[in-house]
Image 1 (cartoon, rainbow, N blue to C red):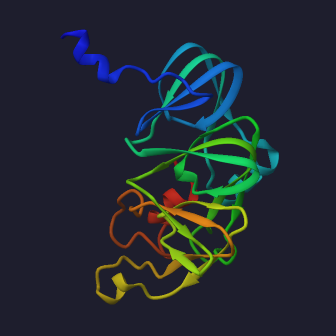
Image 2 (cartoon, rainbow, N blue to C red; image 1 turned 90 degrees about the vertical axis):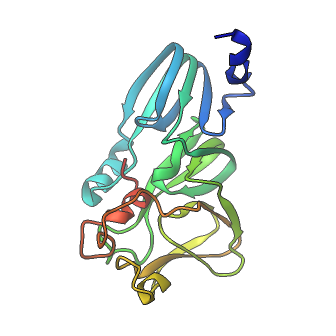
Length: 237
């Protein structure tokens, strides 16, 4: 094959630590520093890059043990280039500037070392299977998140409601709660028992993906099963 035909796939020149190689692959440039990435997201690397599973600290360990949920992270350190991807999803790079953002655990891809993280429950979600737990990021740096399809950014100045698996991320000033209701799908006999949404209120934004997460067997949603369709929102890998 002619090398000319391959030029369209040539690596993108780095523009900082995080660079989009294409819409579905992130290139991370390491120069003796470290980043946190989702466990299992590495597709290739060059140079002296080392990986270590990230336990997340004692407090987060207990939260995970109590809920059975969590976000599995790995630390990548060294010098070289790391390529990350997840199921051909679209990747977005978001900036935090001494600020806070909450992310659906399934949609986290990577974040820079200036950012701390914790796991917190959505208020009012205790009655759901395992509750609803999100990852709160705080600090300064870049965050790479994924979306199953092209996302839309909604202003939460007016009350906003979303399927718990469709909300990718939202800004720090936004309050969340669980709203129980009978969905249109249930009315039409096409649903699988979903009778709740996540409500977003306050000045800020929420990023919504055009997907309800991975396909799950019928009737595995809701509070009677194992949580099923809640898996991506709760941070299962």
